[in-house]
Amino acid sequence: MRHPSLEWETVRVVSNHSKPPPVFLADMRTEEGETLRTQAERLASKAAVELGERISLLPQYEALRAVLLSERVDLYFEKRINAEVYPALRALCVLEWCIRNGRTPEKLEVVWHDHHNLGPALQGVWPSKEVRLVLGAPRTLLTKARSWARGVRDSLYQLVEGVNGRVRDGASYPVQSLDDPTIAVHYVEGIDLSRRSDIFWYPESRIDPHRILVYFDRLSPVNGRFRKDLIGQIESMGLRRVSLGRASLSLGGKPVCDAHEERQSQLKQWRQALNGTESVTPTQRWLSDVATTLLVEVGYWYSVHKALNIKIHLEMDEGGLVPVAQAVALDMVGGIHIGWQRSDSWGWGFLGHHPDHVYFAWNGRGVAHARENRNRIDSIIICGFPYDSAWRFNPARQDVREHLAAKGVSFVVALFDNGFWWGGTFSRAMIGTFYRVFLEWVLEDPEIGVVNKSKKPTILEQLPELRNLIKKAETTGRWVNLTNVFGRSPSDASRVADISVGVGISSAVTEAVAAGGRGIHLDLTRDGSFPFYEWGYEEVVFDDVERMMATLRRYKSNQASEPGLGDFSHKMDQIDPFHDGQAGERVGTYLRWLLEAFDRGYGRDAAIREANARYAEKWGVDKVLDFSAGATKQ
Image 1 (cartoon, helix red, strand yellow):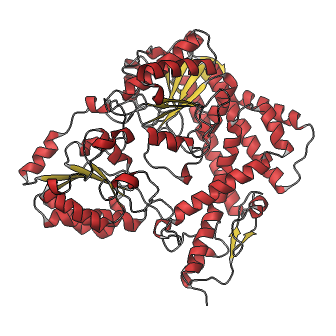
Image 2: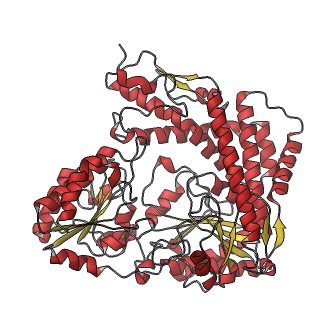
Image 3: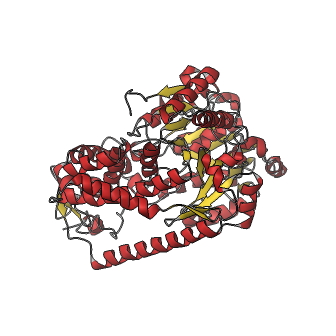
């Protein structure tokens, strides 16, 4: 008899609208102790690479390579395949977990609906002999209708933004300034230098602000309908701005590019290169559909980069396909795609997260992270923790510490949570346990204070079972929840605390340590491969919450009893090898050197080589890793 909780593993197992499994993936583990989330990501990445290699042999792919002369085309397909096969392989992992735990379904099969012709290819590399991959029916009429509705919505966004780009940007800056190579900055985290900022590198860069173009798109927190105060901030800095839609783009009231025309040109070249080659097999049809999407996206970014004379493109967004298309377009115009490390986590889920020509890493561990996962990075520059300049603009909140001291607090803990969902890295149980032990400690010990900086304001709201404990803890006045958390620096909490604790390998804890504090990573995913386990197990990284709390209690009572708790002082090279608050200056100076090289007529590769040489001379040859000019890529 089939277990009732196995409904998720039946026919609609990977349909776009299937129900989630009965247990969080982060709470389900393989026999080796790996979470199913990690297992599924690893299998999907492996399948993506193998299928990408097979697909690259097809004539349609060779024709695409003849049009788009960039090795990042391979990365685009790997990422696209990874995203599409992941649900099927995730379902396989769940089904195998159910079998191991005595909950065998009637049929040992995963049924993949909506595989968009990629299903037969995945069947060829399916990693299970026990469980079959069955290809289900094509998309239902409802699914097609939803897809059509999304397309209409996107078209409206694009039309509106095209109008905003033409009208609102009218007299902000002269068209002739496009004669100079430009740095484009995607507006994502903002321009407030006291917080995480898209221009953290600008204040000490000595770059002419008119050479910097801040651009907005429909994914930006602020889209074409700009706020007046934001416009004022940008203009007061002397920076330029533009709203990018998908229609024609104008500056100074004059048209500068027509993205539609360039898209059609890319498609025409590809079709000519095909020379009558037909897409007969399902895999060939899938390839043709994806190639068309890629050509359209690259055509758009090629037109933007060329028209606005963008030679350096700074992109904070990670993980999606748009940054890859941007990098391909920059290969075609001789520009440079630049990204920087934002997180201290790593793993199989980050396939191609950083398709950059130049990537700024915090430390040597960040280099290892960037070299994995097939990013095709040309140069990696170690700069230290990039947002450290924010601490100068945003002094420590001593009023919070004074408030807690007035309540009798002698020991303050800063807490950093993480988001959770059924298929995520963290589960509801993990985050609930994390909060519960500290809430109970505050209620138990009147000398304990907590400053909580949540990743999102909704996380605690998703834990109604803790509502009463939270209310009681807040009533004591010794539990402080920081507000306005988006983009807020974790150091706002850590710099008033005696020690910081974060869930997982926490980037917020890493920032706390970079700011001079002590920090503990509560790794409830139990990823023992992380380097901290090698030298700091049960000192800076714990995988058991009760053992961590026992150690914290001893430390609170007698700090000399646990001298190594949260202490990275002897391993600062693994956090920030500079530790001087000047990471923004280093990044900004490197960008200025690139711009100066372009001004002297250097090409992209020569500009990077010169900037690398100057950076190595000033900050150390060990801080520059160059994989260009025929060197082995990641």
